[in-house]
Length: 410
Image (cartoon, rainbow, N blue to C red; front, side):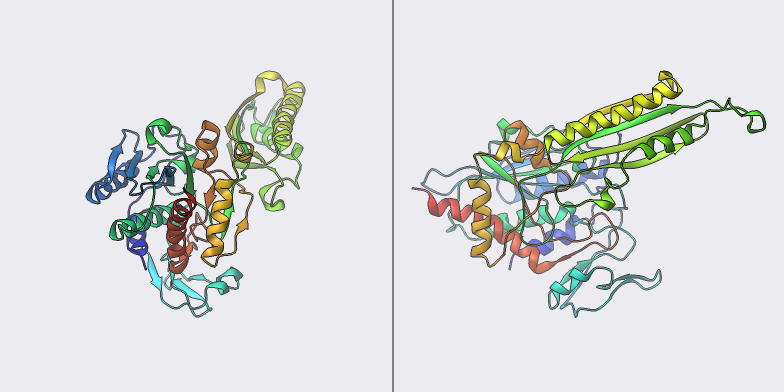
């Protein structure tokens, strides 16, 4: 129906896995390589104001072809892939007419994508699934969003009779490592509001997300020969375990869902002399979020009192906030999406996002940006897949949003 699949299969071949704590943006050189390709594609298609910044932000405008006063609407996707699995040498393939059974991703390594493990695969019987070869992630998060936006751009160029206002396009780096479109020049971008295409299964709409903070705890231990260590040794590893024991065991990612917040220990590394624990703290409710941060401080302070203030260092930083607080009073942006989905035969599913997107940070900076589905499943791992027909629906959603605003305008 559109060129969406062609774009997607091309974009996933670029290694754009981002990197934590790189200290530069983009955090990896592959993101700039893809950014230059996106700049080339946009210029080749005749879009205006095509810009590539030194930090790998790509923006462009497909100018309005309407005599009506229509809003300038942005569509945004990020170029980087997640840190959890390799994005190098992605070998995607299309399983035509999925039959509802197991899909062997890699026979040699015995990697099988199975509905026994992922029952929702059964929803896509008869559809075409894009899968990995079982050695890397696929990269649908968020190259599917990129492809779906470009598919819509291609369709509009091929159909000049389709009425639309200014269409603002942006591709951003390092979303997976919480860059969150920090260097996107909102004023220059020029959108009245925007949408990220960075969601999951078909029908998902997200205008709520976690409030988020990071916390790093560094522990200074004291090493003494274990034969004479009684009353003297302070094992930093054990002190780290003691910190973990103070956190509520039923408030972790594996024990919560929907609007329930959590504490999550991302990493724990150390030895007797020193240890470091990295956490993320999440909650949809702002008051509960602030209470969680205070609880983390309380736990660390209790250990300081017990073992000495010099033994524990806490560095806690806010990352992003719930976009719902900013979208109140502007829900027409979300209502239009749901109306468009119903016109396309898609049942909207309101999902409180258990994470964040570029749109969350942008909303707090003044560019209201809810999030809509791309169609992918099992993001960030080798069992990732995406139905082609759902990708095409996401492209159709971009067009439908533009159509609805043009239809309703005077």
